[in-house]
Length: 346
Image (cartoon, rainbow, N blue to C red; front, side, top):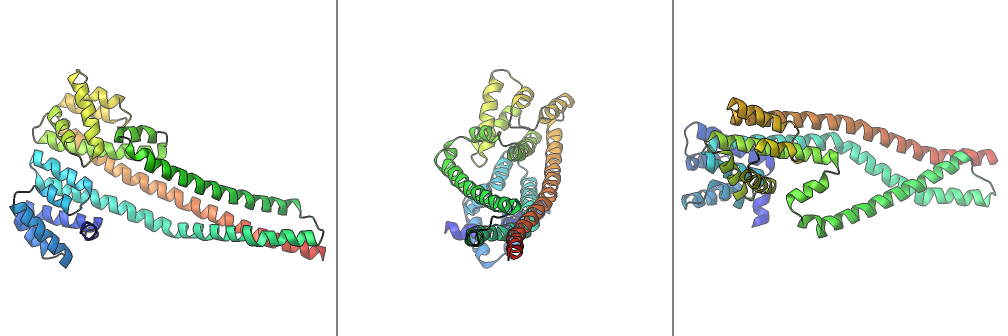
């Protein structure tokens, strides 16, 4: 049942579902009425799931737990869990929908732009392996039988193929080793320990740092706007388990608040947040508009993340094409140059 439920909702379908719910609730529908209206437009399998979900709601189960049982994205569940605190369900639904839409758009863009280059790379690697295993040994044997020495350029080409072979072999061994380390050791560490280890990989860590700052500032702004204090908001983060980073960092921040350290100083010294986040908090506290400043900053981070992903892809795609073209040239030369030299010997 778990597997079937998961497959019933893609990220795009989840985003559309949440967006329609938000619109209906803003129009004055109750949650049950909105679910009934949206349910008409869903597939048969999804209708069955939502019917069960409405029954769970009638029995008193919170909406975020219903979505958890339907295997929605954990970020969505966390956002709706916090809406139980700030009381704005329509806003939480909008945020969830937008988050999933942006996430899916980024994944689709990445797949679309890299699908063909990745296919080319895979094909060229297969050809390289075939040339190194089948064609080059035949040329070497032919040179030996004719008692002819290959030119320095051809010897260099053959050595390059040998090098590429070892690179591929080493990459495979490294991937197996990293997978084993991840399963045996990495998974058992806490989220903050994982992030500290990943800080050694700036390219990946920077993106995760930005995403965590976005989620923290967005959800904290909603709780502050609802009238909760910073301490109460952090307690709400600590009590949920859907976003482990928020849970662990809030527990650490609560301890430091009890010691008298301000959130601004904690964020400024923490390696897990964007470097400008402390300045945003300072400005928001000084103006008395901390909730507004945090929300504005979260939207800035989201837009900035989109621009960075587009920039990375625009840089990565031509690099893959260039590398593919180089490897294709190497394959042609490794076949043609020995043939020309042997023809000259004849």
